[in-house]
Length: 213
Image: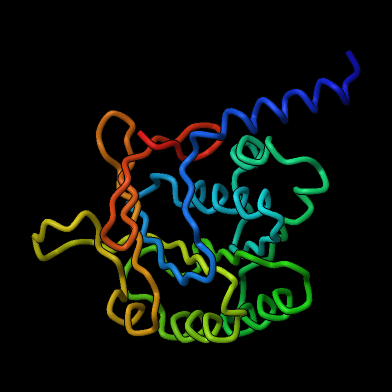
């Protein structure tokens, strides 16, 4: 058996195994995903990136650092070389408004961009910086209305004693600008709760991504 044939078989098996993966129509959504600790925010973003690429789209990924190489390889194992080339990483370092300008320029110049992900785009604790907030709201307005924008950040600390699954920072400001508020919260027995604007899915994280429990 040739190496190419073996690789094609592996890709096909991975595609079949992904049939039970979590999926959701994200087209045109503006989402602020708050992540409780390290329970899979970057993995969720990569999961969505794979789905968009398999649907024929292109992904812009902006973050201070690239995702873990091993995790990236696991999630992208189902894509061939041509498909993987539709994932574009941008360095999210420096003035936030200039980073947004670079994202907008890439989104407008590259064909079929369907998802823009900003991972770890703000400080991990405390209030979200005003300049960062202003920049991402500006980004949401300047992007194509059919392109999905996914912002991934750490959840805030709940000091009120409420029964909320997670604390989304700057929640009201995002909601006032037509963002959906999503959250990832670690549960028991390796289950993660994915809150989609109040609609909760229980999922597990596998090598191929998120799988519905």
